[in-house]
Amino acid sequence: MLQDVMDTGESMVKILKSSKADDELRKVREKQQCFLERHLDTKNTITLVLNGVVQCEDEASQKLLDMEVQKSQAERELDSLEQELQRCTARSQNMDSELQFLQRELESLCDSEQELQTLQQEVDDDTTEVIPSAIYVAQLYHKVTKIKWEYDTEPKILRGVHYGADLATPINIDTSVRSLCSVSDELWNFVSTEW
Image 1 (tube, one colour):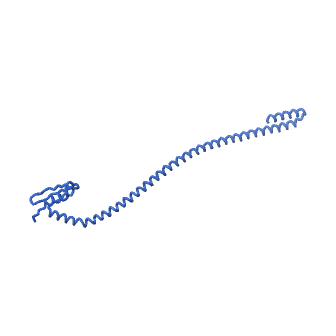
Image 2: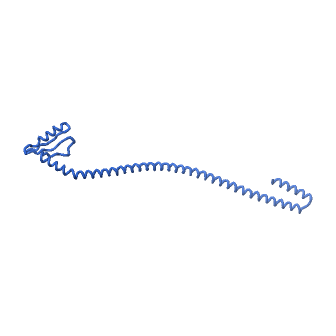
Image 3: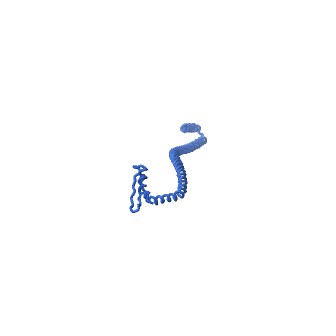
């Protein structure tokens, strides 16, 4: 395009020289010079605008790449948070189950404690009634039989001492190998028939 303008300008100069119109030629040259200056200014402006557009595109591309990186990082963080949430939810469910189990155990222990207190009260009530009579009976048996029993023996073993008139005789009977009648007879043999 610039070449066409230059060619047209030169053609015009030739025509004007041949007609000897210097004033006209000078005017055409001034117009041509103005046109060229405007053309160069426009070209410089367009170059600046295009450079600005390229720079804006580069900046926009870089921002888009940065945003994609941030998006990928945010997605990874979101995935990590979702996994952590799942782990915490599972842990919370486990702790809820354990808490329910422990609450049931506590209730069971409270019930057992209540039962034990009730049984203890019953035992206390029974011992206040039974022990004095049991002590009386034991003392009566001791006075009649003169046998002092050991109470901390193994099951099925009778152990004690018979205090006769002039002799103390130890008693050690295994009731698992003898009949109750045999044991009873042996014990009654210690009792004196002399009153």
